[in-house]
Image 1 (tube, one colour):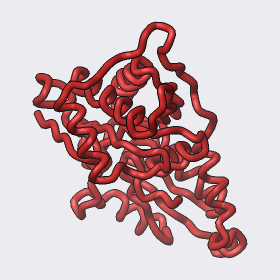
Image 2 (cartoon, one colour):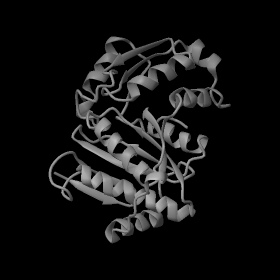
Image 3 (cartoon, rainbow, N blue to C red):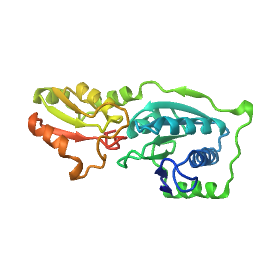
Image 4 (cartoon, one colour):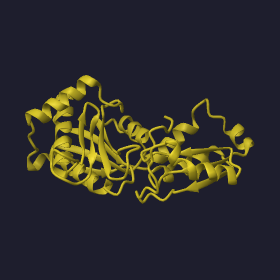
Length: 259
């Protein structure tokens, strides 16, 4: 069992004892401290926080714990559900939120999960902000909201589509040239959120054919998602046999999707 607290967030393996791995108690403590930090940092009694996650099997459990904790701290939660890392970042600024939490352990195996934290600009916390948060956790300076101050929960609109539309409007994106090239692209989404958004993005860009491998967002990773040579065999074979122009291996939260 592993639990790692750092200036960028908290990550660990699910299960085990509090303080030794990513248990519900650790999740609640960290989410509480984050809400307390935002209230103090922006000097606001009421804050808004965007929440998004990848498709890990622990994701729904962690999502509900975090959302409920933030509401208990008097924060309004905008829940995106399954969304990529940069999509959550964009949603923070689009919703004029005070922060955001991304529930993903990126390239780590399926037993891992993490809370990655954003400021009101949709950026990861700075080193100094992260140190303040860790001090709050160590000091236990947490006070929950009274009954009439509990936060609200709302589901965000389709920010995956919002993100795609922003990409299509970028001046460097030449839709005519992409369509003319008649690209065939293979993708391996490791059964996470990339299997939802990347095919939709490639279709919108005008890619001729998208060949999908492990694109069901079940969170059951068919192989280690880390992009190492030993994990690239299937997608490499698919590119050769299907005569694709290129391929994409998508880690669970798709941290490399363009803004």
